[in-house]
Image (cartoon, rainbow, N blue to C red; front, side):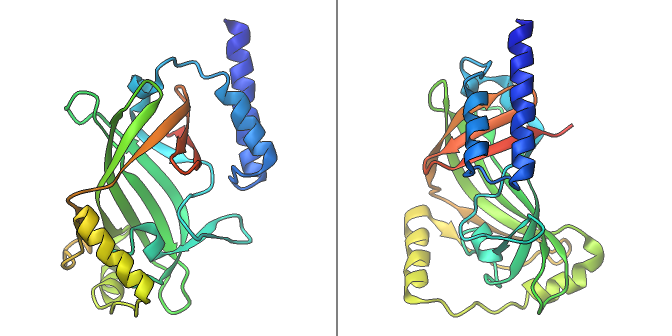
Length: 250
């Protein structure tokens, strides 16, 4: 038992070290190898049912997986605002750098259904706007599909400032933003999302908090395989093969 524990701890340390070397890039051969080694040592038989899934906060320690990101010289990742939340918030082309991606997972009082919110902390790095900090939340729920897999469903999202001291500047940027000119492809995609998923776009800003939100009435469902889970780390694989490594925050 002690040998197994020591082997697992060594494998976790090796994975963390590899992630630091390659800025969280799970596509690097060395990182992939460390992930595979650790997943073979998964101590939980039925991880999707385990109480260890629940945490005040999980912190993403691998690279963010949003589409069309740009890796910066400092190892962080930049995206446009539109790429973080279904193009729901204007200005969609606003350039941001991700500071942290967190995920609180708690039981919702309906059997094994849990929250599956993705909380993205960012800083604006667009040369045409002040360097404000904000939070995008993609709200969702999950529940076991089988012993190793979670069914995931998103229900909406929100955009809000991190620091209310800059609320006036925040309002100037986000309450007065005009919709960007969309290509025909983007217009068709927006229509598809509204029809298929019941997407309800933002209707305005809460002037006291600076928050803007949207809802999904018929939200899309996906699956998430839990490859590894213990008291410290969680490794998952999405339907498109995206691997995410999260660390439980203390």
